[in-house]
Length: 177
Image (cartoon, rainbow, N blue to C red):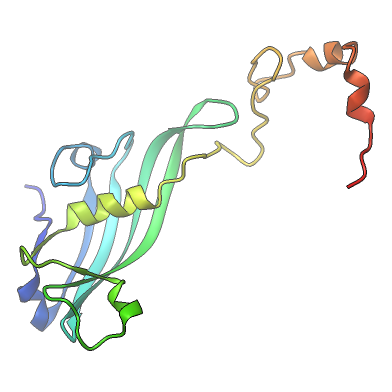
């Protein structure tokens, strides 16, 4: 049986809520909730956190790790990328009155329902921390700009041909900044 990922906020007022969950790739990539499903999840995700109530504000603190299948922007190889983040969110059932305007911007008001979908919170946080350009390793050599060979697999020999190119002498020129 899957864990309940909805929290009834008024129930949090007395005791708070903590969780430590393992979430299957299938569940993260399903249409459950209102936030777009994730793509490329390749193993079980972990998410631990807590929600506490004080002064009409519910504060969610948590951390998550999600292994994803990504493509290296240098060599175009698929690899497993570990996405992880610590998050803090603040919620209220009414607009906060006793805080300054800047702090009000940090509080999300949930007036229509008193339920919080933690699957939506997790997915939204993963999307917000998404890195568009990831590399498979810091030593990735990328692709040859001439022939397209993956230089992590070996040398293609195009550099030797490049020295006979009519503009090859420009590479040795020094320019003042």
